[in-house]
Structures are given as structure tokens and as C-alpha cells.
Image (cartoon, rainbow, N blue to C red; front, side):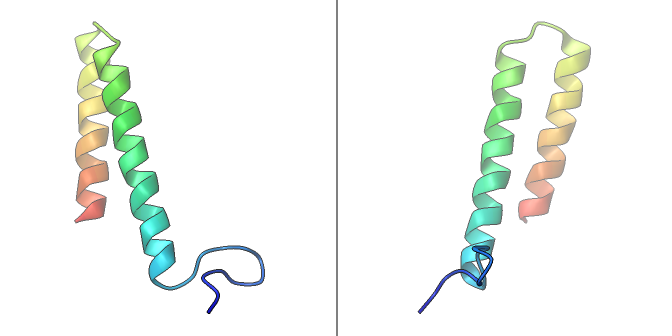
Length: 58
């Protein structure tokens, strides 16, 4: 059983795993930006983006 199509892209449930991993990685990256920034206005934007990313995963 192949988990990719002829172009190498995941198919079926495997694609959902790939998408969720990408979303979690993005959330972690945004959290790193917040941890390394002392600009509260920028951090608020990052928090809003994290909130949106988490809503996508629900």
C-alpha cells in the first residue's frame, strides 16, 4: 500500500498527519518568536496568529 500519489504527495489519512504536523510546527515557531521578542505589539500579533492556527486544527 502506497501512502503517496505518483507525484510523492501524501494521500488519505497521511496527508492529514502532514498538515497537522505543519500546523504544530508553525505554532511552535510563532511561540519561539514571542519568547525572543520584547515588543508587546508584535507579540500580540503572534498570539493572534497562534489562536488562528489552533482554530484551524479543531
